[in-house]
Image: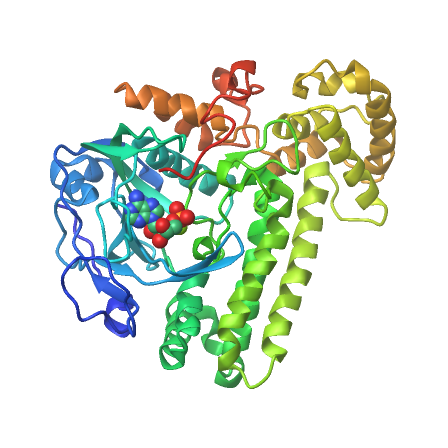
Length: 518
Ligand code: AMP
Ligand code: MG
């Protein structure tokens, strides 16, 4: 058995719920509740991440050992593990929802990583907790595979994210009404073991503030700063909380710039799904932009208002930070720290967005006038139905001395003729602007290809991985994940994973839209 050292500071330094039994309830005056994973019938390891294992000083083979698979399934514990579920609330789709909490996430322990960093191990789908409300605490294979795959893909893309160690089939079925049409079906269940330095969410603070438990709010803030933001230890105590809030704001801004850079849409940016560390967290009905559409949302529940569509994410993040600021208000003598934090968001967003878009378009810095060129490009991508990922890879190939829309043809879902004149005009101006960089073509191409991935876990690819895995074959998932380990490198043997979304996937469930039923 691999040996890991756990210190479980969240449990030891924050108050726990005195009730040891596992039933659904409102939990007050506590940040966590004791709960054990519910064992499953026949766990089978479907996939694991050697890179996430290495963080813990483990090899992939350590995870494949039957004793360890039992741990990753919730059927056994390692020495030092003391499972708990945490209490949080949140604003869902703009409305305060009260207590939510880890309904199907169970933290096993906080391990000390191979590099001395803290790595909390958390099972998702390992059975109900006191926060399960009316649900079963389980997760279906399709959603677990999507979380596993995307967590690791995001890491390789350089986007801050919680990680995924393993994907284990439970050998049991789970009942889900996938289409919300009143016809629930039995689906295979699975459990993901997630890894992050902290799973604390904005909602943890919001719930304590909503209940006016200011003493505990203050404790949680100071605990979070001490455990999760060690760099702030040097800030004088009187300014530390303000510096922390500004840091949370700045990290969130950087995360939004990354999401826009790679074409990721979270789909459920409720405040309970916002990480205090600025990590992508809680992969549900997320999606990736294929044909560029700023209004696209992958989440069927989000369709009426498109609150969480691609282009709105930076504004929603800011709104969510304002809700966090509301929660923290009682801890500050006046509003200066909070307005300062939101201003830090605005500043960090505008500099991160400029840096990201300059890099995507092949510019070393952002100049006046670039905004127009970038805005026009996105309008054109939308109007002409151009694939976002492929567009930027092809743009790197454009000959600045003789730009032609033909270079972009393979990124288009329709023959580009109808928009050829507009593309020619735009490319001419783009070439003039870009030539000012005086970069050799190969250097420009290489720099652009480092900002613009060639491979992303497109929705239809994840769906194919799911269909194969449900039929007992994980080779597609393995090949896809293997390709996504080097998302910026052209891999000729894996060209099929860089292709335009095929026509059959345009409106197929799982490939175009997803429900929250997971
Ligand atoms: P989400 O929007 O999926 O992040 O989840 C919102 C809330 O619902 C969280 O408190 C989750 O823990 C809870 N939840 C979602 N699915 C389940 C489930 N199958 N069992 C228990 N709780 C769940
Ligand atoms: Mg959630």
